[in-house]
Image (cartoon, rainbow, N blue to C red):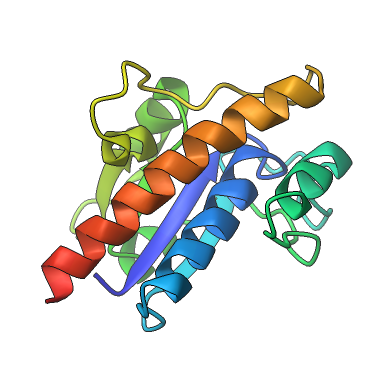
Length: 156
């Protein structure tokens, strides 16, 4: 595993938080060789920073995502990244239809790496409260630790 792309709808909440949390978990595990990025299936927020509530919630957990800029998934991403991880089922379905023939990227649900948690999706906190961002980050950090452990096992 050399590269992972995290994807949600707008790339201003869940996917940048997931990228930041996974980057933190990978760095802590000494897996600095893995490249990470995030994107959205829509281009609504392209070029803009993450949502202010996402930045604040992530910073409370020592995850800095303020430097990130939203971008839309590109066809080349399916060739550039080994794994493309969706935050929810709608994003997963959209990625499957976007994936060009012949690309080797594995499209999976991010929450697959959270272990025996009965949650399959990271809920979108965009229209909600601070608690929604905290809940999303709880799930994201759980899956981030699982993903880092998965990569460590595969690398070792």
